Length: 133
Image (cartoon, one colour):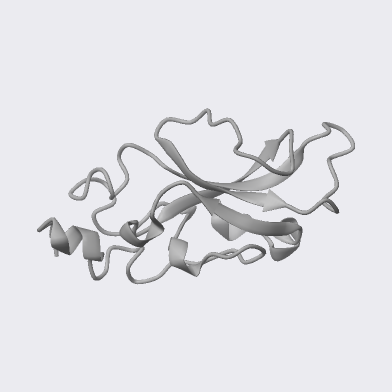
């Protein structure tokens, strides 16, 4: 969960790579995954889709026991608000969700009124989608 990610766990990040336009996303889920490399697009094995991932500096150390690196991955599930605006997360957001506009390398990101179902995104307004009150 994003609230459990600490700044020291992401201190070796150098960049965030977005695979989608984050301006149209009210929130993304973030997790700290064990991956075999510091850089490059990681394999994705969850339902839904990966929307971004972090790159690590050469100074990032691999785990002594597994040889893997802990990197943030940003993703969405099929029942998240961007795909199902009137569904489970029409209001509120999953525990690991954060507003992607609050994210940078080495910064956790945080929830905002928008990520919690507040004012609709520009894309939702343009599509004529309104959230229930």
